[in-house]
Image 1: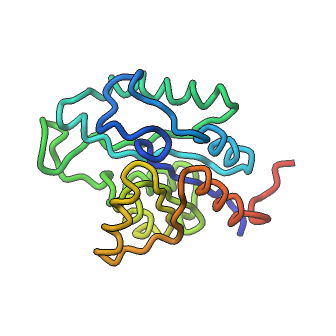
Image 2 (image 1 turned 180 degrees about the horizontal axis):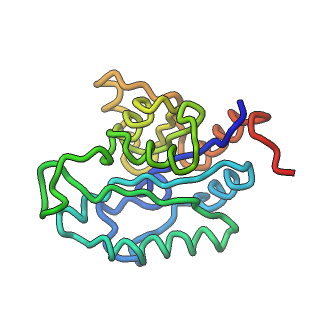
Image 3 (image 1 turned 90 degrees about the vertical axis):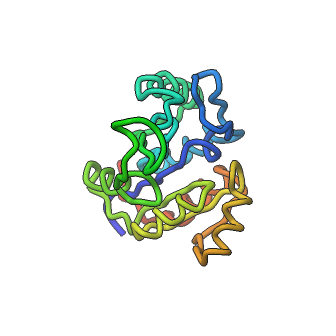
Length: 198
């Protein structure tokens, strides 16, 4: 296969508990096995990126500055387990709700692929060799539109998203119980296909 491979992980409901807009660091709680799952991807040499719709910014629930300590906590929690995120991408926009300058139609809000293409440019990725993991239909739609392998997890909004996917003929490549199973799928699928670092 050759070249770098990335795993694009949704944040809320995939890596951490879904609480309907994390507004403060103390509201962010990693899901069980999330850190170990990210570490397994790190150890495999896979680039790990978060791609997250954060329309709470557009809606005035929090500012982009407020996201900084939230993501710092996320990275600190992962670091405790020897895991890390290579890059965090987020979309602060909403097409119809909220406050200027964030209430716009953009190319970054999933199911659009802007965050994926930005990462592809910055890391030199072929998105067809990459993976998108999330708990909502928009994660699967964005991944499919980018040509990536998609994994729907059954944490967060996963069960509802699975119903939505079936109603809208959106077919995830894999359905996983949680981030741990999704991570295992990615490791298995990339077995022998990554360039060696030694």
